[in-house]
Length: 217
Ligand code: AMP
Image 1: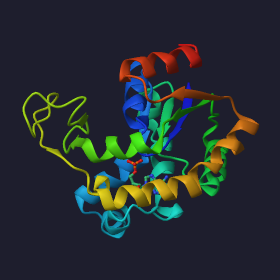
Image 2: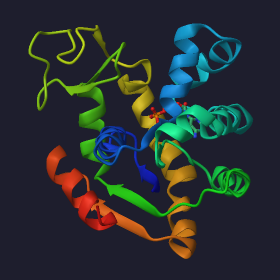
Image 3: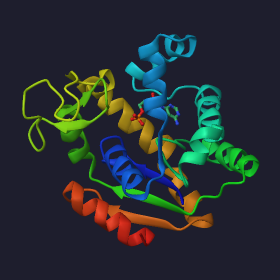
Image 4: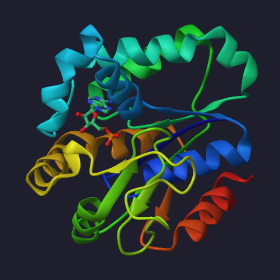
């Protein structure tokens, strides 16, 4: 099963993608995580994109597409998993077109698109309170879902930090980019794919079971 999950930054798409991937034994492919790994490893790509990400802007299409293409084509991973859920890609209409091209070559098709709907006010609150584990990428909310020990990941003991792009000055920029560049993809997808709309304001577990019900798993 191949899925695309769309939603504003902070809508919970990363959290839900991870949960659906775990539940369905499919691959969670997050372009944000791929890029952050490149930054953390200090690769050439990492050095090119670090400033762009901190500013809340979109990384150039060719860089993201190359990372995605490599990841989708990885033979060992294709053997290990029976499908994927794409989180953070596509983010523009052009990326949606590029994705169709890549899928034409790998022979994959998108079975369903999930769109998590959430009020922008809630998004700002969530992102400014979000903390992320630097090691395993687990996500916390300082008020709704804090770690047991402050600053330490419950899952792996790693350090929990505020992502550079979750700082208040960047959040507004990311939301603007989302509205202008990413939201138009929805109507594009509505023409060619089944788009399932989910209420992202509900508790994490309920959103997951709503998604599971809608995609029939
Ligand atoms: P995310 O973890 O999905 O919120 O992504 C974090 C940041 O990575 C974004 O604000 C962008 O700077 C960059 N990024 C992730 N995915 C893409 C993409 N598909 N196209 C361009 N930039 C991306």
